[in-house]
Length: 72
Length: 484
Image (cartoon, rainbow over all chains, first blue to last red; front, side):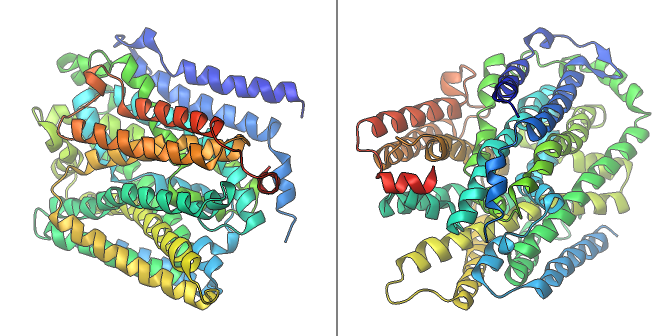
């Protein structure tokens, strides 16, 4: 995998961390899909975390540790 | 009925733990880290189960009762990102080093990394001191739940004793393999039962839309974060999940992985597991206002038990109690085993002068320490009157503040034992200061500004590591070659 992709994914972690602080929904009590929008946002955040982890696993995996398992 | 269900459940957990004993290989490595043979699914379930305590079921609903939906943003959602990231950057590296150098404990690694016996001993003492309150959460939480669900028929002391005896038995016989199997079973139990409790209660409340409309009409402030949680508190609270990087029981679970690739499942599915467990708890806590308005302080922690008692007594109450027990025991077992591992490896084996401790003796010492730790934890639970959830927050604060140590050890060649000593001492001093300042103040933050104490201690700890390291000699090149 390329170093650029790896760095972009690391940047994605930081971006997602910033997005955790959804100040714009702090006082919004409207309902989306039957749930408060502030709650729906953070459920979506959990799914975004799943997606990011899947990308890290597939495109930024530390392959050097896979070699370690070959040693007895 | 309730009591019968609980005893049937405990019997099942015991059987699973004891069954694992058939695969026991009789070595210290097998007893403490299951011969590094755990696969992806078991690793996911045991890591998640170990990290979820009674707080995720009872505490979350109690907190949501007071603070509304913001609890989900404050606790599980941040953890859904930060914890898998720690597994990715730290867990995989720890596994590789453990495999290469046969490490069984954190202290073994830090001792060699910074060429210091003294540092290992200091860290051992600090970590045991921080882990004991965490152990008490399990023992006290089990007793409280049983007393509530059976309406006092089974007193708190008996519930705590029951939890201790069951976990003591399967940990002693099954070691880490029994713990991982029992953890996986119990994690699935509390995830499924939490979901069942949610659907049954929401149905009795007239469905999700109806319940939500009632809350919106009467308690609309629970549907926003508003003044319940300040933005600065939410930002600094994200330091809390860093504790995962220094928990001895999670460190030990990392070492059990069969390969580095085993971490892929836990990485991807951990956020899903968190959402599945916390979402029903938070929503039920909010809906609790419809049936039980006006609960004050810690009384809200029992709102879930009260709702089940009102809407679905009998079988569901028994199943919920089983779910809470599952959450409690799946943490307690790993914590006790990791402390027993630390005493055996870092004290008995390390300081033994005459000869190397045999594999058989390691297992024997391990079992003796498991018994001893349960006896101490149970004794302390009888005389402790502290709020169990406040205990959790302070324990997490301490471990999260030690996070710079593992980061420096793994990623910073120049870090030295002086920096590591400075970091731990800083944590010990500042943690004690904030603990005595904030112990009796509900929702304490630094100067009541919204800043969590963990953010201040963590910053100071990182600064102490950097300054101490730069002002002292780096480790020897031969040592660095071992680890980088």
